[in-house]
Amino acid sequence: MKKYISFFRLRLVMGLQYRSAAVAGMVTQFFWGFMEIMMFQAFYEADPAAFPMTGRGLAAYIWLQQAFLAFFETWSIDWEIFSDILSGNIAYELCRPIHIYDMWFSRNVGNRLARGALRCLPILLVAVLLPEPYGLRAPASIPNLFLFIMTLILGLLVLVALIMVLYVMTCYTLSSDGLRALFSSVVDFFAGAVIPLPFFPAGMRRIMEVLPFAALQNVPLRVYSGDLTGPELLRAIALQFFWLVVLIGIGKFLCLKAERRAVIQGG
Image (cartoon, rainbow, N blue to C red; front, side, top):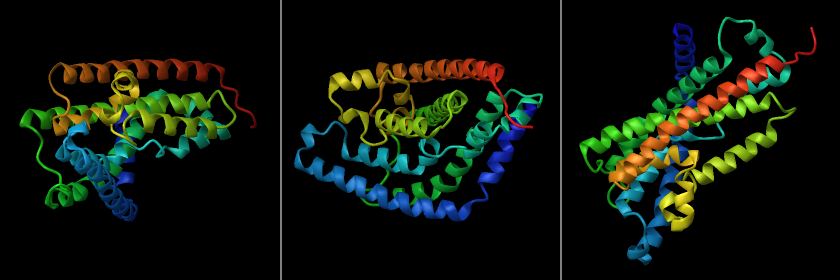
């Protein structure tokens, strides 16, 4: 366990060094957040009764989405892993007394936590100071705040488990381009990154909410705003735990098979 914690800490420290990239990302996220809120606000003012979320709840959803974008962005991946797989340098990892899956998992969590730590606090601070209906307000209750933190961590782990499946699948292909493009498009749509899930038709939303993608940002962001409560909230948290276990199990199984059938050319 200590060696995997070391991989995590190393990537965390390395990621915290990219401050200029974090500032550039924050500027982009501020503009994107404003545009999204203004767009949805126009729909809300046209017919508030038909709006599935309150204006305050939607503003919280968007600002938290921007603040913790590094936790859930699907296009941000560890290119070193793809390079090692496709170039054959993974042979060096196979010689080490470690489990490749656990090492990659810890590295990815460290990377995302570092980027999120650099960006989240400034974005949250500015969002709190903004006036209605554009600002971020306090959570619905103190328990909601603790549940938000718990579901945020679970959502991060589920996404990393999903990405781990993508990494391992690359061992079975000659190119990862198609897999990456499909993965990013599907996950962003079904996770509520493009349109929050409450805006979808009821029948379609019920199907989307049981998929692993809904266990990502959809759950913590709606928990904070109070949109998920009661039995619906407990069901969402249970699904987060369920998909985390299932995806890790699938990833480890595929990784073990890929290690056994790996053919390294060259010498």
